[in-house]
Length: 335
Ligand code: EPU
Image (spheres, rainbow, N blue to C red):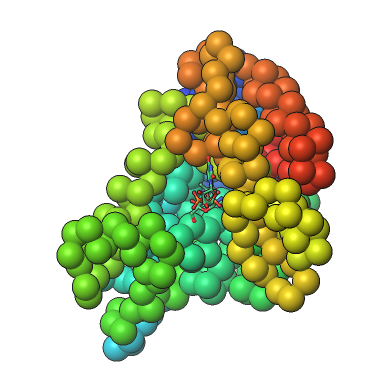
């Protein structure tokens, strides 16, 4: 086992925060992971590093999950069942599916991170959530080293939420995710306004998986910063769910406030809109700031510390609470 000392994690987190791992190991198989857990269980996991803000050096052993491989478990005329190891890059997997004409995750193109972390926050974009295609999650229990399986139901998926953020948090290491995707009669999801517009602009009436993937890629490129160029972790906050009653009161004061109805009683308000109204959109404070095209995204222009970005997040939370009476919940893991 090759444990390295004093490794910078700058290239292992999409925010590009330069903190040090006192000890670091890359694990490439379930067996290796199980062997490691026999000698050390108090570990810090890192995979694609796309949903974390690191605010300090990591003293625990940092374990980088680098288990790769895609396998087709079975298929029939209509569907294909795949198992994908946790270390596969999410976007590359989406592109591979699009190329093979496997439908279901094309709307989730260009989301940073690895396959192993997609169930944790139930990644979602443009009307699709990954939970709708996941059949099974395989994970190693840290305490016992045993390989266990979670069915879709076991995962308790919700909006940017799952059992892995709650009861199973810090107890399991996801090693593989299984998906059911369509081979024909794809359930295309093009109703999200910007996708419709993008396809219409290209005169595409009967879109292919590739057309949708391309549309999503172009929309995301136009709004969201590429982590390779500007450090970020996508949406820093969740879109808050508020009561319809509270929404109606806000609408009297702020007539243009958008919302997405969830039920008769609850509605979701875009945090990006709230943050923009509070005047933060595009604000830059030295090495960090709020993205100019999407206020929900906090960015590291180069050498910001995690603490600085966390402070900015707290300033934003206070401002939103004062202006709208809404508590914004941070979506990324602050370490
Ligand atoms: N808006 C503003 N100002 C902004 C940003 C947004 O007024 O700076 C308004 C827009 O005009 C629109 C509404 O807010 O009316 C929604 O904006 P958008 O379609 O960009 O989506 P979002 O709700 O801000 C969510 C996800 C994104 C996902 C998009 C598209 C969350 C926390 N974020 O953002 O996910 O890509 O929908 O489906 O749910 C991520 O999680 O990292 C992420 C990027």
